[in-house]
Length: 442
Image (cartoon, rainbow, N blue to C red; front, side, top):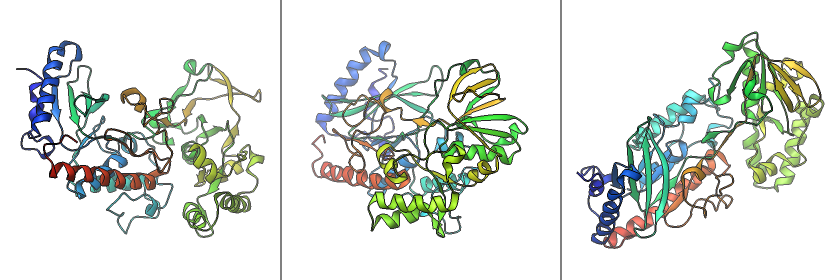
């Protein structure tokens, strides 16, 4: 049997995979599949399936938000996820003590608030439970263990071709085609590993924070954490609480702010002030309060950037550190600050200030990056350089030919919610137009 003949309905009774579409579209896709069938030995894809609704790549919070907003408008979607669960970053690649850094009201997905009994800052476990309830409420059932290896727009068909591979060395390849493609893989799809002279030959343990779970395994050990963002700071605190001897590398200037100011969350205070004052004025207020509460952080090796925290976040996406107790440990000397690393030899690390110290473990809190350029064949909406939309929020959610992005706003889940609603509304309008004119390939 021709493996590409399944284009007209692998799942005839599933609304996502209906076997009806316009005659013009059928003829085009049939021709396409027959051509691909002849090249099957090269292409290796074993099935080709037409999806009437949008294809969403990624079952994290962003993908779920778009799927829910679409479902509310009567539009089914196919969600493809490379892992075996929703929110795989949260479930599989985060440390145990993680909680939301912002109050829950700023992290809700569209159409469903957090349970009233949740704390102000829900834990990792509570957030995952919320996402699972969210998916269940809107009937979102992702196709798991399905990695997208290539997605490109076919000008002849006027459809997106999304080629996927199942998990495993010889995983089955399936190609899905749809009018709409929503990229929801996010800003944190792949780990970032720094280039440090001698790191590969370090005689101790090296791990990225995506593999770090708890400091319990490192009691009594000298641990060097490379990276001074929120993750690096919190991992240091966790190590300290488990009787390890943590040191943190602070290479660049960093803004550290108390998580709460004047009896409310720092983020909430910032949002309120921004209603009335320009960004640079709000930054001055935040830094003045931080100075009063924390003192001069530069004396402890934590120099502040010349640009304020909110302006810096807007320009570069770099988030200020919202302190949850790490700074007090730095102040007491339980956590030691070190400058950038010059080189590593054996277990010995040489810093830029010529200091030499030995460590048992190195934890790389060096963040993540987008992987969109590796699989999406589009250079208009997304930048090849960093895999983020070329246009800044709020204008980076929509591209050409039915291409959308969500979860790339650098504004957390609030930005995700805004874009998810916009995408669903835009697709709904096209969906309704197609319903009125079923012979038109939109």
